[in-house]
Length: 414
Image (cartoon, rainbow, N blue to C red; front, side):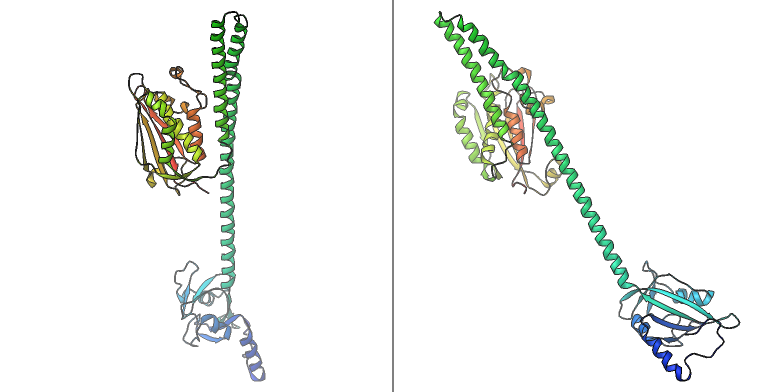
């Protein structure tokens, strides 16, 4: 190679010319030289392999590449390539990455190292350039970057999933704590009240044993209090068992469920002369017993809170929810199909401000205290619906009946 400002003849002379030429050709780095005007003079096979072509010495200027691009992909004029700048400005141009395109259209990322060569007068007479192909290095960097991004995305997803799971568990814990508080209230109030009556009436009864008629009356009071307590305990057990996931959802025809409920409530339906109408209901994947409990409690609730002057009228309709409705409803999974069941009655209704309170265990509205029941039925309905990844809400107005909207997935998520 020619040294800067060296006043000697070309090194490829005489016997050593072949020797230096062989060294030059066997270098793995792409190397070529230009005269001061940029015309290519010498090049090795590594340069030909990189360019994908044989340059025309004395005609191709500054670089033997078919085309050159900046790293952003925009074309680079040949007279602005690193070798051209090195020759024009008389300085080395290092670290300016370029992209070269071969005649076949393939591209390589290259790091050029052009340096000018000066004569004794300090004039640029030629230049030498070493081109380092960094394509594979760039690909490895890109692959590493993509893996890092994938790992970061996976990590962020795992963190998000765990955060959501923690939030879900916190909500369940909060719900469980609320239920425990309500159970504590039952133990301290609802269950103690019939016990207190039993104690009081038993004490009075002790002094009335000589009067069979009075004794029988107090025994009736004691029996009623005991029955009330048994009902509370039974409802509590039913409510608590819903949290035990030992039943497998199966295909359930809701028409069959409703038929069984009608049969169970046949006497009270006849007694109240109730009209119960329904459309053809869908088949869904659910726990059969819980679907029976859901329908039973909703229908019996409408029968219980019917008007005193009118016969109960209950209609049950169903429809498939549209995708946009599912997306707009909080708590639903957009990947699932849902059906909406509407249980509508003409009963006494309730003020809409209490639409959430009626689903709270043991919470009964004051003006409903005269009706029988423990205040567990609708809470049981909500728990069943939640167990099936659905939602339930009620719409009503006093003396205008009520409508209970139940949204359930056709299939249960895995």
